Amino acid sequence: MPKITHIDMPSPSGDELKAARLAAGLSQVEAAQLMAYPVQPGSRGGLQSRTWQALESAGDPRNMPGPIFALFQLLTQQHPSLKLLGQDSSSPRSDSHES
Image (cartoon, rainbow, N blue to C red):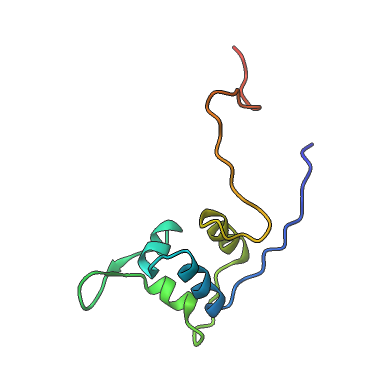
């Protein structure tokens, strides 16, 4: 059985989410696209993400779920204690089976 490690994944406030997005150098639309949130045409042209806008808004009761925020931090290299590692295509995968 694999070892399961507990990782604290609190939901960010709107201000924390905005700070993480800005630290990653992303617009709201770019951040929304990275996390597969919906993006729609804006009223002044261009694109917008109403979902991402709501998640960053202090006046909106919705917050990004903690595990989704942890993934955002990992994808933007901002997680405080973990990082993603690429797979080395030359080494065999541990879950591969020989036929």
